[in-house]
Image (cartoon, rainbow, N blue to C red; front, side):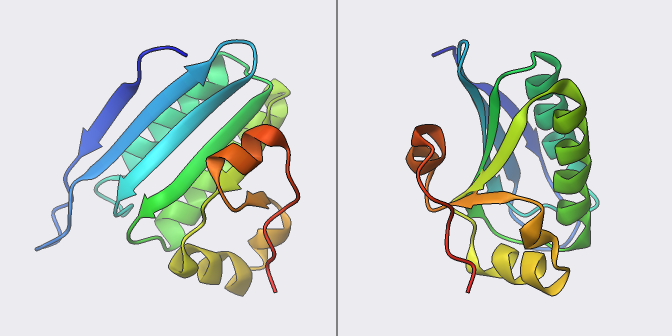
Amino acid sequence: MSAPSEFPRRSTRPGAPLLRVTSTTIPGSAAIIHVHGDVDQDTRRALDEALAEAIVDRPPLLVVDLAGLGFCYSVCLNALLSARRDANAAGTRMALAAVTPQALRVLKLTETDRLFTLHDSVHAALDGESDRPTG
């Protein structure tokens, strides 16, 4: 595994936590993006940068670990959808891991849960275990 990269950003929303996005690469296998904090208009750039950097290397699999995600609404969803489009264009499979209940609700409400492969954990995504139940 390579040393993690970090992409921190702070929201201008009062009381909003710092968004910290880190990445880990398993050479020849996968890139993992770990998201901690809130993704909003002020912090989206950190997520976009981390996802773009991972995709440019064309890993076979891109796993977005959402276990530490606080706030996710349209801005976060748009970042994930853009990354999915770019990953598909690069020939990279993309999976979401440890999707928080709030993020899963947004995915279901927008019916975009059907567009992503969902896993209970990063390990499940790396092992190719069955998709996370969405029902």
